[in-house]
Length: 277
Image (cartoon, rainbow, N blue to C red; front, side):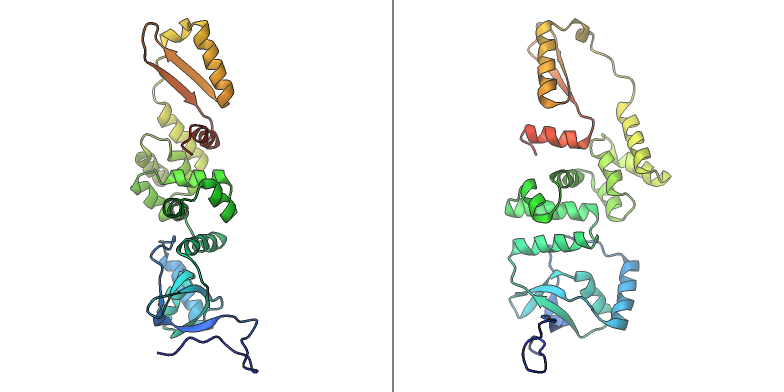
């Protein structure tokens, strides 16, 4: 098997403009932790046709792994297309990356190319947090995203698998999925959104309608709240910046505390204050 050597110029020195090397395609392996999982056949067909005609114009980013192989950091679609186009070697940029850096670079590269769907992006963030102890703030700083963007995407992972599959398949957008995060029956609503082709705004209205249900029975005791309870409600509402309702029956130890948020950003803020963010 041929050795992997850098391209050189006429003087025998490494070419400054082309720091890539040509690697036999059988020496390249995919990264099992690649955040991207979905490769649409129609998109791949276009890429294969382009690679067959013009070759790979943008080198893959790889790192050396045991066995004389190179693991893909970024560019798995190009590698797959090269295989289907029956290329014998591909251009690569060899970099020394840790496992953590590999995942970060893969996420950044895919986000910049808009290649990740919302679920894949969220799963990549979760992997960085679970495997390397990243916080949402650290991710936001490293990836150039807002903390609220990352927090909102991570919440999507709480949706049922059938809903996540609809997002992966492009049948539901991230905006649609966000409207289902707090729903009691997201699968049912998701199916209706897809069946009727609802816009995000219409999906929000549907989710709200199903969440409201029948008009709730008002607490009779709320009219009879004493001054201390009313004052406590006011203090909590002011501190949280959200409506707080305290239902406490006279003569009982237990009660109900209801916090109402209007947006997902408010929910994000509440989770952070409660130490769950």
